[in-house]
Length: 129
Image (cartoon, rainbow, N blue to C red; front, side):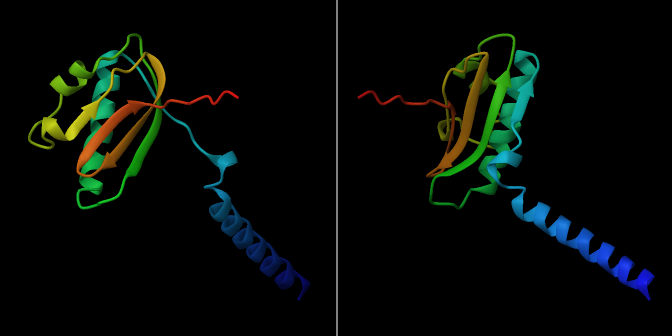
């Protein structure tokens, strides 16, 4: 009888720990940092894949949605013209994608707002007193 109680206790403990993990995995201390590392061309292609998926997921959304926050680590700075020149115009019209010039090691945000995709560097404003 005690063996059955022990097995039931272990099963319940495992279930409770998995439930606790899934509930807390979205908290800040479990946050995973998405990082794109590679050459300029590979970084551009990965950014464009994220842009396409963001656009497809939010095509009918009216509000502003942040799709991705990623860190890029590239050898060179990436200009907006380089990203827009590789854009597949069959998937997204060029007028619907607004891109900033991106520095080689920066955090970027890909967001969807009113039918447009914005690819911009994450900026922190400092308030001085």
